[in-house]
Length: 606
Image (tube, rainbow, N blue to C red; front, top):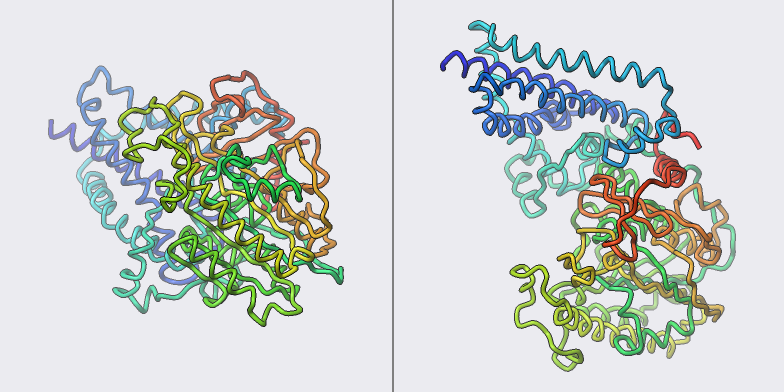
């Protein structure tokens, strides 16, 4: 038995070392580490995967001890190493990681991916060699002597403390947006680093010299941009128009599209009659982060990991351009935008005086209305961003706005019955939106009283939608699928010209930035040089786009959702309606768009 344990120890250590080596190779896609802390992070990356291997090894130990089933292990090792190597090749070509949809495209449309047939033959030969190598590893583990055993024990013992060091650096780096560390997150496969926004300052307090409480990148990392994954924008945005209209953007949290109606939102609905109302508008995500990213960058949310990994190097060109064009830019928010590098990415140059956070939506709106009398606004275009969150669970509102009944006694009671009737909880959401409608009405009335509607664009939308088991599949809230119930949000765009229309063609969050920069700010740079979106006033008949959630993403092609990680395919209108086959041409085009602002040597063929 002792010999078997020693053999298993050697086998586990061999897999950890090989994994450590391959994952270390992934970091070469970014700039070489410059400084002690980035170097420690890069060299400790393998411990993240090593810990997962150790935990798996504990669970698989009984299999190793039984000779008749022991051969299962080489196939598991082969699968794991194949994933790492194939993902490395995929990332080196396309700059995104392996997923189920990519595998389906590989088997059914490999020529469209730009893969020559001889590479397929080479791939299968390499796979065969890798399988033989995996079997050899297990056989070799039984023949190791004292030295290999000692080495293996040291490798295994080193995993946990090295992982702790890795995690501490990660917590600090994500708290202070230290790009010299976080830039590697986007290039690593199946990588979900340890982060804790509240503990970042504690790490810095323990190691103030090594990990200071300072935002942004190190001075030496300023030279790394040319070596990174992103090339954005392709050309600087230039604006020559003498007219620069003011812009007000109001974003409601968790706002379902069908709630924009006269019964629930009478004031906003009446205002939409004077504006452009987009009846099939899709958020760039089913959660806040990808929704905000698409909204404020005009890019597909699949870019977010790479941008967030080097947040200080890749700020929003939208807000950056507004600043360079002389706009007075201010944020009024009830929800926090500090985490996940959102403030650094979207509002990098906003001072604390221009970034104002409040506890309640009423306070936020009152602060904005009071600010309209600020003398700094005189004879100067403005960009104001309001983020209101009463419509987020538990759906808050004053008692006088409890119009819709019944409401649930316990807001989260659906966790005990996923198939419960969604109407009571949806009524509570309706009440919160009814309340927010009153706040929007206050804003519109004040702007109208001041005559500001004559030179102000107003965009009213949501970050994502909210589901209340409409599909009868037990889905609640957001972030669990990409059906219309979680991704379709209202979009109302008021332009000073006074034009109005109801638009039925599909629009996306990615369309808003290029439309505003072109129409409101007067920028001349072709939108394709900084955005994946289209003009809201010249939308194509056929449409495809990218959506994301917490850790998975999907392609939306003319009403069909292709989930990338799971491979699920269903109708956006009705998730119960499953779809067969792939629109490979549209998916290849989306790959091109996802590579448009990445540094790649090879791209999918058109």
